[in-house]
Length: 370
Image: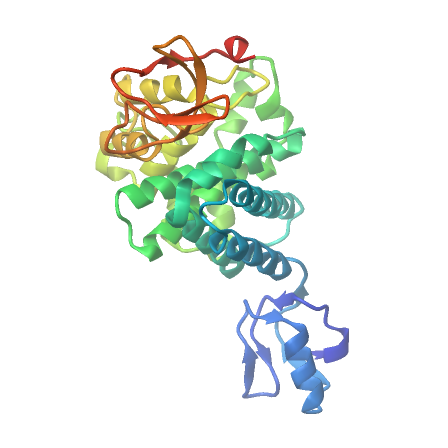
């Protein structure tokens, strides 16, 4: 084993292999953060060196601590103070998206992703969504990608939030919810190995370029397997472009041959892609995107999963601008699964529950909003 001087180990780094005090005593597992408290304890007991077959890596666990603290502030905030809630939710979302951007950067630079660190962060996101899914849906609009290299991270975070929300609707256990979240967050990680011009181009891809793009689920699967992620998570990444009718890729699986996590990620990332602007297409409003998925032309998606998406988001999702039957324009600020056709809408500073008497007529186009 390699010998490391305690005072030279970067604070909040973590080792890729167990840390030992000697040949027999294990000081910490691979995911253990080398905190200031641990350093102080070692120095107090006169231990100047530790041993490991791995190497210390920076960053992930200090980020985990920041994300956990942001989540704690959000979860403990006064539920009646909407402005504070949205401020804390925005901070939490910003930190998690930055973390996700760095995961994609690490892979593009041939660095390994730590499974335990990712799981820890996804577990925190699951808690936030279970506490109040509306908050992260609300602040998503503040975090649209501003640079080409942010696109995949933005898609990953939004798809994961939607997938976890679906998992909550179908009543996944906490463990399965976390596994689903990890798989959804990293379902496009294979894209980190491809040139950005392939998926951000405004022009039609050549047959060779399209063939290259179609390799990303396989690349992602191989990467996650090499990082020792569980098979159920790796398969979610491999199969998220498979379709119920067998028209997907890379294996043309159909029906029950597609794993459940992949079925959920397929719906979540398709909805996210439909509602987000890309260089090669305009975004659809959220209501139209939901209706497209509900039609399920060609039976590409699992009907149960699509219905769970609609149940979680409602027919008129949070953030949607709508025209009301009284001629006024408003924005959906809350939904009630028991009355999906009658969301809570804000007009100017007034918030009210829509009813058969004052109902939503249709979504507004972008030109009509302003």
